[in-house]
Image (cartoon, rainbow, N blue to C red; front, side, top):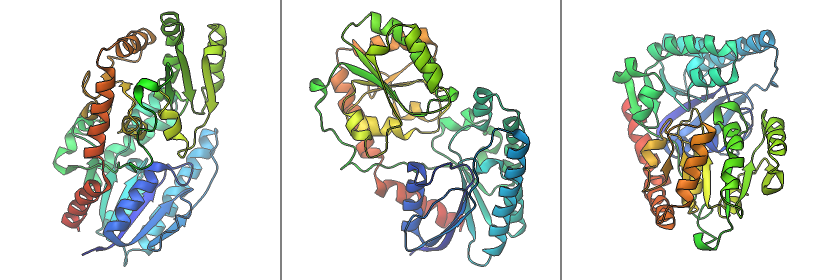
Length: 371
């Protein structure tokens, strides 16, 4: 039996149709008769039982204007919770929802279930973006965690990483990650792949990609046949391009720009190793997608990554994301005698653990218990 209706609040999505948003919608529409979505740039998902309430506004670098727009967004979301009160009993706040004090206050006043689904760390993003606004949002997070009905994280290891220990009594474990294994699959056998490693993702400070670029001279000097792919776009693109020129290695590094989700399997099936040197993560989709394509992953032990990657078994873990550590571990991974077997074990792990059916079963149980 389906739950009557679920509301989803998405304050932080900057582009509609993102993979995390798609996944959450597919899960909730299989559980609920109707799903109401409120947020900015949420798009039109063309689901028969999805009703969208969107407020779109462009990003702005001026902190005063951004703050005013954020107040407006909270007011808009609170109004939607109030007007949909007779239809929606449970709201899921996602992608920055932990900072939405006003909507959670309104929801609690109306005796609604207010669930915060964590996708990352506001505190860590603030450190690496160097923005004062994130310090304020960190304070908001402490208040909303106290007010919320339930907190959902992707894994137990995220409880301490996200500083959620005081709220352990209201924390449940569930991820919204599942893969289409007809799309993300091995199309190029590992032993036939070119001598290519890479990074794919946003080119931003919290992703640590700048350290990967700084490590490349040492990596490439030790392997004259190796090439590198850095796929993505973001504020660090210019700095990364300049650093490659300074290191005289630009001709061995490909920078294709942003890679669409449809093109990801093709690129992942070319790589011998995907490097994720992040400072902060929840449970990165690109890691799971790479593993499904038979590509081993080298990553920092942040977020829920250690729950998926066991060093030397399903992938590789590096101690930190300093250029020296990245270079040392890239060579360690590439020289591993069982690299192809590690890639195969990683592929089997995600195929067993990240199916749509398993994810829906877990979420159905959680939402029915809360309702």
